[in-house]
Length: 411
Image 1 (cartoon, rainbow, N blue to C red):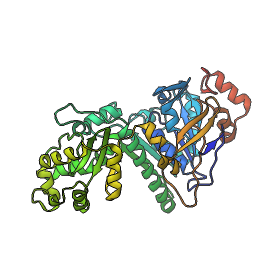
Image 2: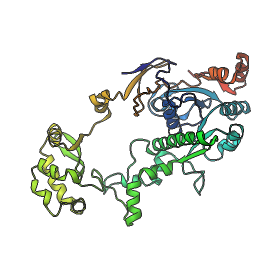
Image 3: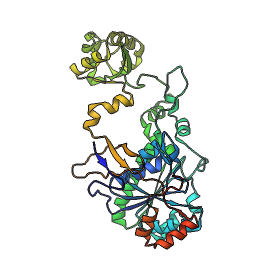
Image 4: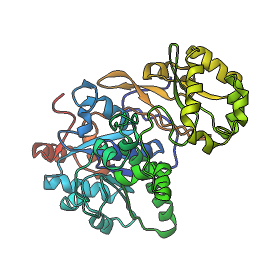
């Protein structure tokens, strides 16, 4: 298991080594984008208000200003505390942006402009700047300035309408789906803008909304509705477009299996129903959709007689797609997760040894950096001195005037 010490940035140079990113974002979507770019070698300076990114209070609180949400979204960053409501805090932010390649922000439309940190202002001083923004509903339209969270976006964006049992209420998916998707999409956009910069010499705006990210994520069911006019319904344990595909109860738990058309004949043999392969009711994917209930009765009856181990062994014997329903304890204990080196450990200055989830992308010749998420304001003095050339007495004066905060004063 990979470990790193406090303030240690391990790993070799990445494709974004030498690029600086100022991360004004809070919560999930923006910080996740900045973290992905940090994984590629960018020097990410996380600008936090004196009270800290609000995600520091989300999830299990492991110490003052340290939470599971913050730890999961801010590896490989430095933290500086600036009060953007203070003119000197805004001036420092503008100076940092003028010396940087990328800005990431997720304030509501117009807020950064009020701070004097909008794209037009910053690009005038730094024409090569890539300015990346995440908004809830977008920058235009009747809801452009409306507040948004992942939960409300799952509702507005249609995802809850297809999640849950057919005769039950719509359900929220358990993770912050639109936030994480928007962060990934914005990362793609930033990388494309950096490539364009090589040819044009000019930066540009890159915008992603939670709404657009969530709708794009749902392209198959949304496209199905657009083509047919049939509104997709909640299908509970079963896949809405593929039969058989879903969760089935066994004697000691559940398994999930999928048998697409190329696997259909093999599946029928595995469950001792070889004649079903050519049965007109089930021989094609569309026929199985049309006769879902009849086929489900056969499959449910078969798997109800097996244990989970027996079901998984049968799937391996016939090379079928089948998996147990893991909780996170079972997942992280599985030898495949260990083989993928997905979980590492940091030596955190305040918390000691803490676990962290690594970037899932693996390269042949690049080792992603691996440093613990920063404490609130941990690098304020370092950044002001090293990046802006400020003397100690200047930083002391800014701290006294509450334009900046050094470290976590509440610790």
